[in-house]
Image 1 (tube, rainbow, N blue to C red):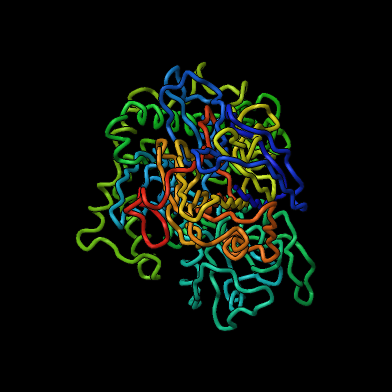
Image 2 (image 1 turned 30 degrees about the vertical axis):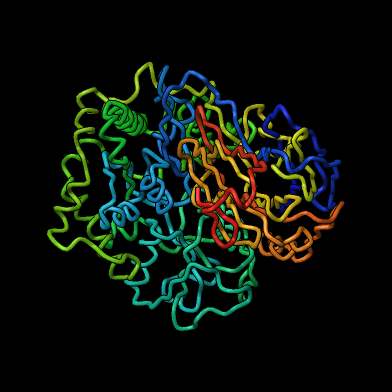
Length: 614
């Protein structure tokens, strides 16, 4: 028996399986059940849990994929991504939209990313704890592109007492916000959770909430925060959308307005910038690729400075490079090449400052001092647990490798692009979120040796553009696996899994609901196996565990027959963020199957809950 529950609003497609028996998808509001005749279940039986987004890469010629973490900021070098300017016949660069610098650093740490754009604050916090990464270029100074924006009736820092302000943790805007509060002499309390709806903030201090950009936008629309220290599309959205709270007397519902920008804080000595960071293990084996990347960034920034918003950088006709930046920032389906943002994106590009390669080489000691200052400040604010003990500036200086800037200058990158610059057609493939889901509501299936039905018969997921899609966000699918005898065991086989860590995860639970294993990340196929044995818990008792795993208090597990015993639960869950692979993307999702595998007597290593460590 397989019992599946998906908390989702729509359905999505299948992984092909030769033994699949199609099940029609059902409405998310209807408890659909299927009953198939069963016999000989004591024999080896397989039920493929085809929850895999095995995508067709846009190009099968790539022998190497470079994983590049990016943000939704509008910068000249963003034109390199949708044009695939860095790709060649063998190497493909794939771009992943990051929620924050803190998450990008975590991905570099784990090997999920090879290269990433990092704000100076997450870079400083990573260096302070000895992370295995190196900066090879400064991408930009923040200028007016990042800001603390607030609701009406808040005009200066002195008005922030009693308010709730949100920002992503470890970000440059986190640093900007705390620095502004410190300079204004305002106390604050920091939390990672939004206050309950309607709860009043502490009147004598500022409540700083560290949440993701998407959560900040939702909290602004709901009126649960009074402002945010943000960047990119979130900054645009907060300054375009009305605040959702009840306006104070004399105010009208209106979008956020700027209170303090990164440029203002820089004048007070709190400089913020972005660096190009490379994982050390990748750098040691791929210096030529990093040299090509650094040269491309130097060329793009130089070309923009030399053009001064004319020619291919124009906001109107002929602005091919600006249209590429607009496409990268918007990532709009189905072609993500909307022209409506061109003028606004040109304005956003101009808000940053782009130091030349020569300036960066001359100011290495200044950069190290600024990185050290940020780490020291975040330590003083109890955001960082520790900092280097001895000769701090020297420590930070060792994390910047200037040789790639020198190579870029030697190659003539300071003169900008020539005839081989980026082209706006065709645009790189974009892996878009699928409209379908791996589970179709509740289903009860009986499997045996001659019949192996597929739980999710509509994968891999296509998207509107016709290519392979990403799995859905904000999803939770739960399957209960059962056998006919309380002594029987099942084995889960997981030959493929690729997901966005840490929150997009496949978890395996025992029949009593205890976590056995969890799988997440873009590592090579795990080829994992997990065995679990049944106990006296029947499917009739699945509701309690299912309720806990799905948070669905109205869970209904009515059965076509009695006498089935639970052996295992599986849960596939995703968060609300899609990193949207841009470029010749790779497969995502997972492929799994479960089968009968002996009985408890064959499993001497099984623990008290019938679980074998594998």
